[in-house]
Amino acid sequence: MSIAAVFSDFGGKINSVDFHRTEDLLVTASEEDSVRFYNIATATLLKTTHHKKHGADRICFTHHPSSVICSSTHNLDESLRYLSMFDNRCLRYFKGHKEKVVSLCMSPINDSFMSGSLDHSVRIWDLRVNSCQGILRLRGRPTVAYDQQGLVFAVAMEGGAIKLFDSRSYDKGPFDTFFVGGDTAEVSDIKFSNDGKSMLLTTTHNNIYVLDAYGGEKRCGFSLEPSPNVAIEATFTPDGQYVVSGSGDGTLHAWSMNMRNEVACWNSHIGVATCLKWARRRAMFVAASSVLTFWIPDNTKFSLNSGNTEPDAGI
Image (cartoon, rainbow, N blue to C red; front, side, top):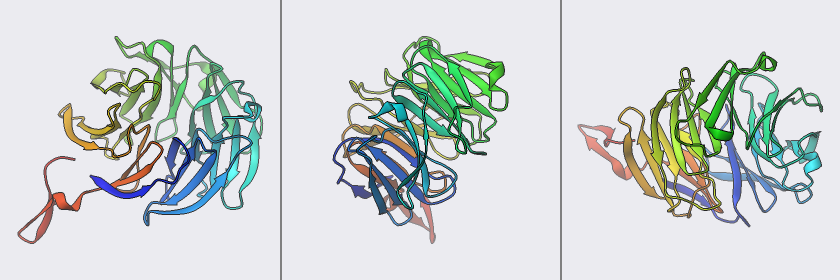
């Protein structure tokens, strides 16, 4: 992989990024209180909006290609906002969290979404109504994620515990609980693979774990260079066979899930990449610090063989 496009005009750290599920769109939220909208097929900036009153921290697309949910860094009484990027309007406020929202995700199948906050709660919401639809009270810093079918969601909490809930009956409590043995660091990020068979955890101690999503067994784990006060993000490739992550020394790494070893390492060229996500529909990922970079397959690594272009071994 190599860098195909660079956007360096941010006035601060990029807090979060998200790809739309069906369109070639990317959205970013940064500490300069801006939300930016990109076409990833043409690597072009489509729109920038500024949110000085509330700030912009966690962000995710809704199902509509021009609407997002964004968490606030200021004015936490209005901690979540449903924004229309089309006409730069706030469609709805979601009030209830008393502290900063640190995790945010949209259901892949309906208008539900979840938020985890430093007030030790996870709240379940519906885009169509202002009021919270459900609350889970937890210990520590909660991190949330839906599986790709939207039937199950995971909540990571204090002590390395991962609780799985049926999204249709979460009020009955978790149907399973896993523990990441030996690491009691808080989970800063959690993702499901596209096939739903694996979960990817990144901890505040800069360790990465891949768990079996059904039984909770640890399939593999990787340690990264420390990055004081900066959480690192990791991502699955769409086929679930590789994990790509940043590191505290400014490098990016790719690991094979089958071989359980590192298969590639690149200089990020942007310092420590705090945001990293693979596009759902394309052979590309984005890495971001205070600079946003688009990464695509490096054509110089391809060789011509009997008229057919075949990639070299590796990712």
